[in-house]
Image (tube, rainbow, N blue to C red):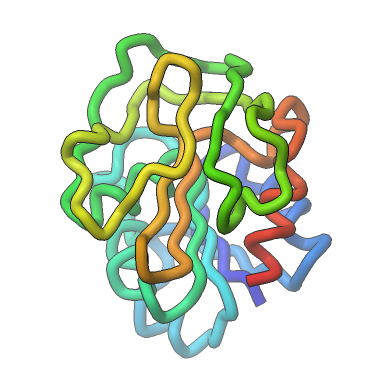
Amino acid sequence: MILLVDNYDSFTYNLVQLLGEFDEVTTVRNDRITVDEARRLGPDRIVLSPGPGGPEGAGVTVAFARAFCGVLPLLGVCLGHQSMAFAFGGNVVRASRPCHGKVSAVRHDGRGIFRGLPSPFEATRYHSLVVDEASLPAELRVTARCDDGTVMALEHVDAPFFGVQFHPESILTVQGRRLLENFAAL
């Protein structure tokens, strides 16, 4: 079972629908569950959804990133990705230009959730905040960027802990379904 933490985003149920092709999905709001309650549910994987604002206002999202890193595979999307970096001491800053509905070429390393995906591929971005690469701790590494160098994905060096700034559930993210399938197969 995939436990999806909903950060009150309109894209959440697009993610639920796609992930539901690979496994059962249980969705909980970011202010309606605790880490202990999540453990009792017994998920196999956790997804941290997109949402408005920054990590500081994302309910249990940062706590989940800390508590489940190295315990279960985690995937963060947009705000979920930013929250994962923030959980380990990374800074989340205002982007030089907001990108809402922008399609960008994403170049990646071909490993982990990117296994078998072409590089680059087009992905849809909806964000005003980004992870500051210079602030990332040694245990997190950048795995994808767009053409302007903005961090588009990161992972933990020792755990199945992945974040993507873009939206894999968007119809314009051509490889999004395959990326989610790779995550669900972990």
